[in-house]
Length: 436
Image (cartoon, rainbow, N blue to C red; front, side, top):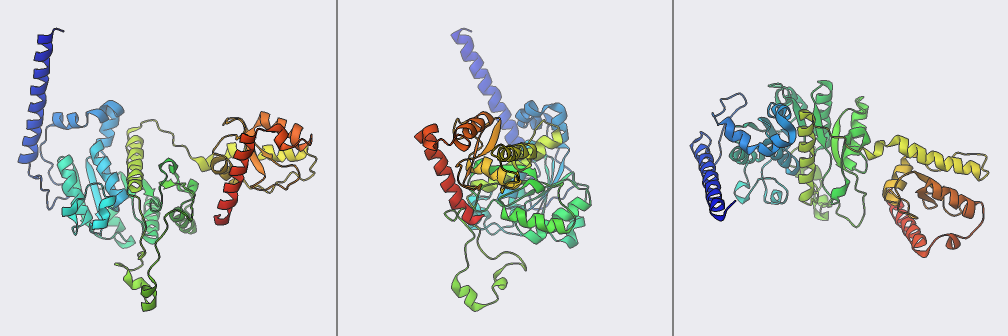
C-alpha cells in the first residue's frame, strides 16, 4: 500500500468511527431513557426500538467468543440477582455487558460512602440512594435495550414467590450476606427447581488464586459456606447448588470480623444496633477487589453455562480418587515397614490439606506434581501431619530403602535445600494447626 493510499484509508476509518459514535450518541440521547437514568420501568414494558446492528456491534466480542447460538441463548436469559452490594453489583454489570437482556435486581439497602470501595458503578452522587436504583440508572446507560427491574425491598421467604418466580426467570443469583435469608432463598430455589448459583463470603479474603467455583458440598475454608451447608443439611439439601467461594486459610495476622466497642456491650441490647432484625451489626473488613472477583466469577459461570460453552471447573476438594490413591500409598508403606495394622492416623480430609496447602501440590524433593505419594519422613517418629511428606512414587521407594528401612540419616540422603524446605513446611503446619 502506497503512502497516499494509507493516508486515505486511515482518514476513511476515522470518519467511519466518528459516524458510528455519533449514531450511538443520537440513540442514547433521544431514547426515552436519558443519560441521567430512568425513574421507573417494569419487566414486560416496551423496549425502545434500538438498532439490532448497533447492539450486535456493542456485543461483537461476545459473539466472536460464544458464537451465534451461544449469544442467542445468553440474550434470552432472564436473571434475578438478589443482593446489589459488591458481589451483586459486579455480577449484574457483567451480565448486562455480556448481553443478558432481562434483569431483576432485589435489595433493600442504600449506597453508603463505604460502599464505594467495592460497588461496581456507584459514585459519590449515588450515596444515600437505593442500590437497585443506582444500578439500574447506570446499567441503562450501558445497555438501554436491557429490561431492568429494580425492586427496593428485603427478600424474605414470605415474598419469595413473587420475587423469584414472577415472569419465570431462567436463573437466580444469590448475593446475600445474611445466613438465614440466604438459606431461605437457596432452599426455595432448590425445592422449586429454579437454577441458582450462590456467593459465599468475600469479606476478610485477599488471595485471588484461591477463588473457586464448585458445588456447595465441595466448598471449604469458608465460615459462611460452612454455616450454610449445615443449615441446608438439616433441610435435606446436601448438594446440587453451585457456589463461588474462597479456599483461603484463616490466619490471625489477616483481617477478621471487627469487634464492637466495649461501650456498646455495656449499653446492652446489642442486637438493636442492627438496621433490620437478625442482621449482622459488626463490620466485615472487605478488600474491594474480592467481591468484584466473586461477582465476575458468577457472571462468567452463568454466561458460559447457559451458552453451552465448554468449561470444566476444578473442584479441589472433590479430587477424591487422587487423594485416596495418595492415602493408600501411605497405608501400603506401613505394610512394607512391617506394621501389622495398616490403618493410619491421617484422614482423607487431611490428604487434601497436606497436598494442596502444606506442600503446594508438589514434591519438595524434585518439585514434580505428578505420580504423587505420601511417605513417613522420620523413621523414629510417629505418623502425624508434621511427619509425612508428599513425594513422587519413585522418591517414596528411594526414601523407604535408604531412610525408613536402610537407616541412613536424612542429611546423608537429601541436600540442605530440601531439608530446609521440608522443615519450613512442617513449621508452617505446626503454626496453622493451632487454628484447625
